[in-house]
Amino acid sequence: MCRNTTIQEINDSEKLDKFITGALRSLKTDGVLIIRQDLSKVKEMKKMAMLTDYFDVFRLEEGNGNVGFQFYAVNEVLDSVYVHQNWLDFIWTLIKKPFPKDVNGVVSFRDFLDRTQYTDTGIFAYEWIFGNNFISPGGWKQNLAILKRFGPMKTGQRMLDIGVGIGGGARQAASEFGLQVLGVDLSTNMLAVALERVHKEKDARVTYAVCDACEYEFEPNSFDYVFSRDCIQHIKDTDKLFSRIYIAKKVGFIDIEVENMTPRFKEILLEERERLEQNKQTFLAKFSQNAYDGLVSGWNSKLQYIADDNHNWNFFAAVKPQ
Image 1 (cartoon, rainbow, N blue to C red):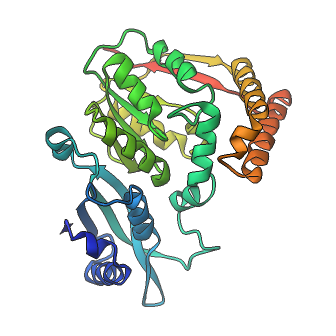
Image 2: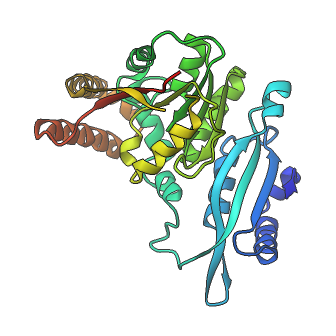
Image 3: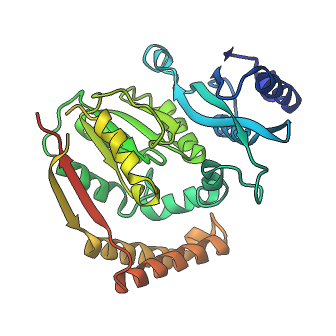
């Protein structure tokens, strides 16, 4: 376990290399490294994301192959959140594993997300389209409409938000319904944005973790609600995901409701494309022509997929027996 090195040390790549190399050489395969670091005094708000990327992709030759750390999670230190109003005190959990030689410079799915779709430019361009704090179709208004379908919710009840993104939905659930929300996502770039904003707002009802929801061991029977938007379609092993959700919820699935919301999805896409096209110059003042063209192309592709009945937007709800 490593705890709270100096700011100078975590900004020194040679010292970080030496530390991680020493940890990998000391640990057995499947050994666990725990790192605790308070980043509240670091000027670079993306330092958590940068360190996570570093730990995730670091490789060391050992024998005939490579070893590195399999990323498990970055958790906030809850004592720091509740007592000191500090959302930037973190615990990394990493597991030593053998790895093949990296392919095309991308070594994990989390690394792939942060290098491609969820770069800073991509995140903020999406937010420009969807509205402040949201990167899902319909923004605040549509997300609130979906949350209301849970029915009456009581202040203090707990919600797990899978694929929380930049945190707008989690903070909305807290502010509108008084819920205690744990938001999880695999993209450190997105959660770096969410963490920066909640750290400024100081809403202790909202906490975050970087993790794979299919692998993370959530506390059994600990959530009243599990919520996920525009995320599950990217997860291959849905059986494993729902087994995790089943364990985490307080009470088995009954009364399963399914609704095809594709007509509403089409309306939203048309509205958002029109808003983008009508405000092209405003967008280009902040982002590139390539970003603009990519968004328009993406919206056009989605609309064509809908026309071909090859892209549905579905609502699923299930309740566990009391």
